[in-house]
Image (cartoon, rainbow, N blue to C red):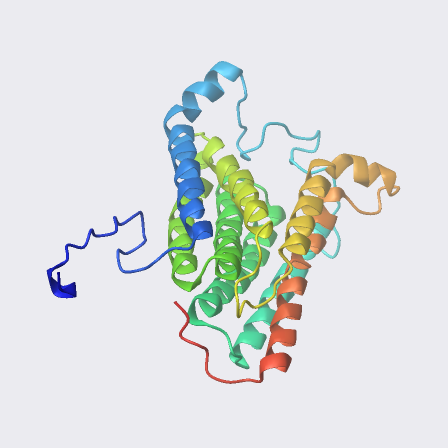
Length: 294
């Protein structure tokens, strides 16, 4: 039988993955894990309000479960130079500076594949957006400002997750994951305000980080940028612990600095392993046109 006469069974297309794009075993497992997380997110969207109502967990006007005596969700409400909640506002400069440094590194160019370059642009843009949104929110905490703050984080999550996929799976899957994560995360950021439902946002944060941990356990692809995902994950975990220990850190430091203020500084450091990998990669390969890697 000639080659032209053979019947060819088409490869079924999966979500956001075209038929013509072959997937590695890691990529196939990524589709399975990602689909499971998407189903979990849909369950949180549908059942979240009912579950929260039965659990007795009610969000106040700030979008948080509890407030301090001074009326804010965070322990350090000191003002300085006319700026309310000074430390929680100005520590967001670390996020803005990290985003600007990343943007400058991108503008200088480098030998990065298109999917990686796009993920980097979204990641650094998200850090800049988060710095602005978080400062706005902490200046006068309210539910609307919290949405702006979380939207910046949503963009950052999308860029970070896409970068991890580019490092471990491939360029086209990275672009797909970024688009899907952007939509899901931005919707989740608004749902505590529009529907009183914080569960989809929890799925985005913790599910997305679990996915990144899973990706970090795999070997980098040939030609990967070389971002140390373990460092990125560790910085996120430390920032989250500082956020949860806001008041405890404030008292432990003699009311010098709160856990939430330190969280902003640590979150800004998330750009460091990415910038370091970009610099080392550019030095090792020389600056040139980005490869058209699938």
